[in-house]
Image (cartoon, one colour):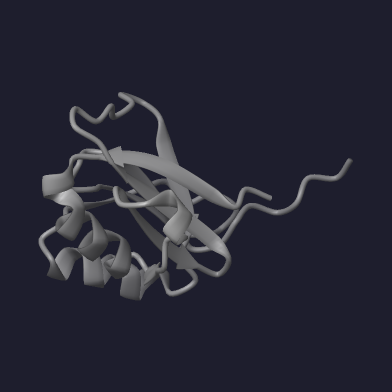
Length: 120
């Protein structure tokens, strides 16, 4: 199980990033004081997104974060309501998927459900 993904974001995009992740179904959670300033954490269903406030953030060209949005249609509508372009993806495993780009430029895949667990 992956607990969190850490994404670099410029300090100026933090409010827009929080709005993006909130629309995707995450809620802001406290950052441990021991870490100091420079971080914003969000959580949904035990999975966290850690935004690392960084001058000159690096955004992978092809890499992306995939998150399960159990309220997929609502999440897509919330993202569109704040001006995010959501691109439909191919359905896999009979479930909807879509991609969106966060304000910092990170590609985010939204999945209505995870794939079935592989036997093995």
